[in-house]
Image 1 (tube, rainbow, N blue to C red):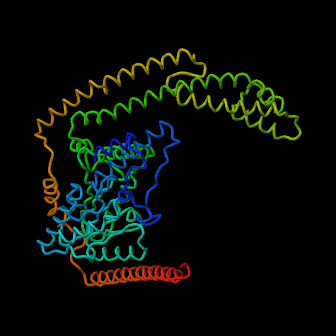
Image 2 (cartoon, rainbow, N blue to C red; image 1 turned 120 degrees about the vertical axis):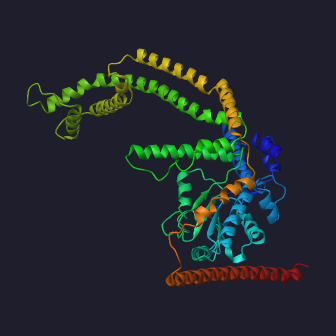
Image 3 (cartoon, rainbow, N blue to C red; image 1 turned 90 degrees about the horizontal axis):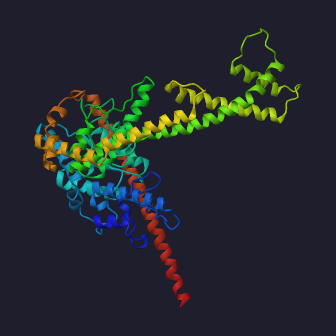
Length: 521
């Protein structure tokens, strides 16, 4: 399918001839997935820059879909795969299924009740039934042990599945964005598989909180983020890492500790494993440094603009401040000879002068006041942000200072090329190759990754926070299970009645049309 991606992203395929598979779209709460048919963008009136941006975003959307399943890709001609084809064509989904199987097997071999697991992906909701079928037919769960929560379901249906999951009747939940908020699934959960990374780190943390919270009977839970090698997963993870660091920096500066952190995993190691091409990995690593240096260059360029503005405001201030001071001196003379008034005091007295109905202030007096206040505020900001850090005062020489900034920009441009240019990327790529040879690096298969996961089962699934199953707990679970089933059954009954009513309306419409046929003849 990659030829189709390239032609469509580069604009070589017209929208009229392009096949769109809406089953790869993200799930939304505004309506059911049947209503989410997508939207065709009219690109006739877009500028070249807008067209390029549109194609980039479209290409990223395709890449996200492909990283999860080829059947979510818009140009896949097969829109109706079997459950085996859908799962086994996706390394990511196969990994999740086999990890789930390993948890189930561990509990059964140790004669324990099977713990709950959650699969999250906010795309491909049309294919959720295929995932469920695979879990039933291939992994060995019962049909009523796997629940699906997505948009379009009634509140009663969602609540019923949740209650039965908390009670232990439902063992697996396959959920879209509908489970991110307001649905707590912690009681008996051990693993959450995030198969669709969101762009916002706070959304990721919100999702993890579905099972990582007080009240879980297990002492340990796992948040698993399956990521494909050489895919957009790397790029999304990179952005999550950057955003998380920025959020943490803001919180730390405020003297608080943020719940988000990067200490639970090593981002650099993950990137090393996700990208097999050493040169592509080198470019990604150095891209961060390049962006940092470029931000500094942009900051210096902005400083030049601010300094030019300060000079203009300085002239305006010097031109008009004499008039302001003279008016203030006449309106409210200084009581103590020689005592200087602060600028704030001068402005306050001048404002009183303008508001005093007894004075003969003019419109020009108001204009002068507004100009002086604006100029003073701009000068204060410039002193705090630029001049003071450089050891300068308001009497600075613009040409001399901007000349110094130009030299700093030139030095940073040279440094950027030296540290992040083509030669630096090649050198970094060679360094990565040497390191991989030294460590004996090689890509791992799905089976090897599952083995890594399953080796932790004994350690993580054996330690409990709540030991035993007290009689009152059994009663509570039974009540939750009963309540959940009742909610689901009531929801199913309502849906069936709505379906039958719809069918009856169609039949009545058809009968009316048949009755009109003789008259038309």
